[in-house]
Image 1 (spheres, rainbow, N blue to C red):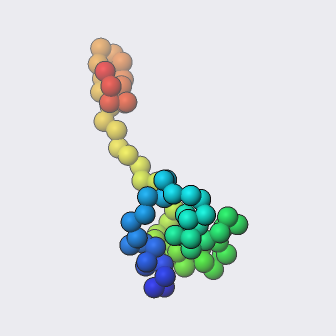
Image 2: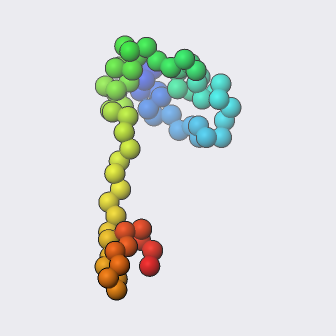
Image 3: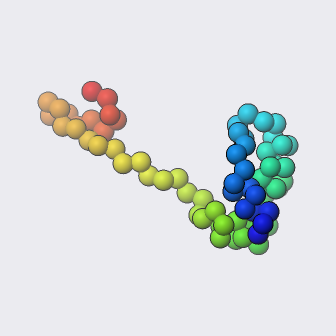
Length: 70
């Protein structure tokens, strides 16, 4: 698990490096992970899901606006 902790704590800008370096940094390949590796990473990183962002809705002149713009 030490290798996974390195990935978790590494600060790499994955959007601005070549794809091959991304695979190296994340210790994976373009073919993905084995089921065992995916389970190990889920144990370390948690489930792969986006957090929901709560949006305040306003009622302005009979119109509901949930985008934050008015």
